[in-house]
Length: 112
Length: 115
Image (cartoon, rainbow over all chains, first blue to last red; front, side, top):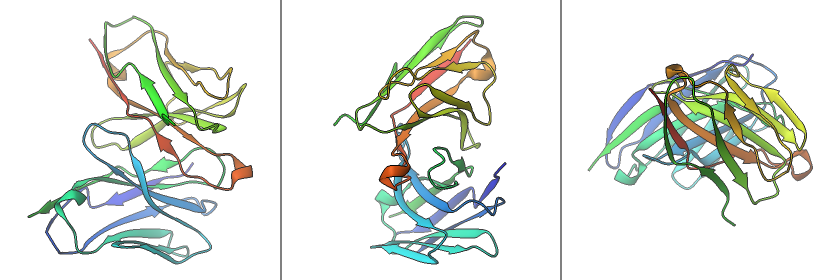
C-alpha cells in the first residue's frame, strides 16, 4: 500500500518568514496530493491540492510543488502570520478512489 | 448545508462496552470514510464506502464495523471497546468520479476514551 512520510514534525518560524514542509510517497500510481490544515479541536480542512499532471500550484501565500520522478511534494507558505499556526498534513491518493494515505503531520508555530 | 456532522463529540467507555459513532453529510457525497487520529501518527483509515451498500476495509479495520444503508449516513460501530481504541475519530466525505473532484470534507471529530 501507499506510504507517506512527512518532515519536519515541528517547525517554528518568525512572522513574515517562509515555511516549507516536505512529503514523499511510495506508490507511483498515486496522482492526487492534497494538503490539509488542522486547527486545535477541529477536523482537517483542505488548503491546497495538486494533481500529477501539474508541477506547481499557487494560491496567494500558499504553493505546492510536485516532483513525480522523485515521488516528492512540498508545501510552501510565504509571509507567515500567527494565524498560520496549526498542524499541517500532506496526503496521497489515487484520484476518485475515495480514500487517502496521510503523513504524520507538521506542527507549525509562527512567532509574532 | 451543515456539511459533515458527527455525534457524540466526546465519549467515555469501559473496556468491553459497545457503541456507535454517528456520521452524516448533507452534500450528496457518494464517498465516505472513517479515520482515527492518534498523537504523532496522522490519520489512519479505518473503513470507507464508495456508495450506499458498498464498504471496504482501510489500514486499521480490526475491532470496527461499518454499514452504509443511505447516501447520507455512515455509522462506525465499536463491537467491544479496548483501551487501544482511545483516539479521536474523524468522518470524511467527498464527491464521486462523476463530479471530478477528490476534496475530502471532514467532520469535527469524536474524542473517545476507553478505560
